[in-house]
Amino acid sequence: MKPIISPSLLSADFYRLSQEVQSVQSADWLHVDVMDGHFVPNLTYGVPVVEALATQAPLPLDLHLMVSDPLCWVREFAGDLAAGRGGGIAFHYESCGDAAAVDACLSALEARPGIGRGLAIRPGTDPEVVLPWLERLDMVVVMTVEPGRGGQSFRADRLEAVRRIRQLIDRHNPACRLEVDGGIDGQTIAAAARAGADTFVAGTAIFRRSDRAQAIAELRGAAHV
Ligand code: DX5
Ligand code: ZN
Image 1 (tube, rainbow, N blue to C red):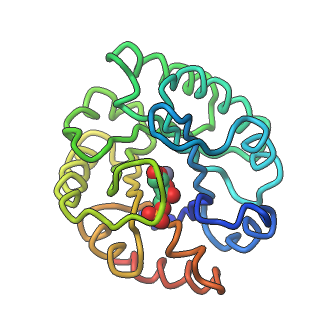
Image 2 (cartoon, rainbow, N blue to C red):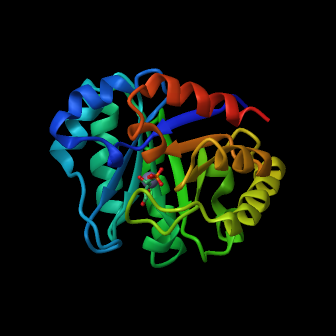
């Protein structure tokens, strides 16, 4: 599967938001981390910012919801994406109290054809938890840092979870993407790709560089295994 590079806007200069978004347009998706100050301690973007990005950004949005009430925000943002250039939404397994809550979020997304459906797991969550939903998913997100902020070091102990999710995807839904998020750079992207990831979020590894197109091209090259 063709590798996808998804720059995380969290590491951008927010004073120059539109130029920062333009600077990564050679990427495939734009990763947008929605944090509610409750599921994780940090607060980031709300509806007006996501709406503006959904309609104005030159890339499909890769929304990553780190929120305590995923169903509310899945419904809200699916509408924004459908009205804009599309993309996908990943919500966290751990933010769903039970299986019915995961089902409800997926059903809300299934009501919007064309919007990708993603399920994310934190470090520490057993990768097997995704199995009951795998056939309804377009993407599984394996967090390779604790969610909440950019610029953390890649956790090599998560490669085992990536390998396990790769086995499950190959067996049950080969069209599903496997995204890794956290600490991805020129070195760690190769290790994640070898373990079976095909979709890569990178925040600081792209936005700390002055030539973003070059940073994206380098990551793309290193993701080919
Ligand atoms: C962390 C976010 C990540 C983060 C990645 O909670 O989900 O998307 O922005 O940033 P880097 O690539 O700097 O680890
Ligand atoms: Zn993220």
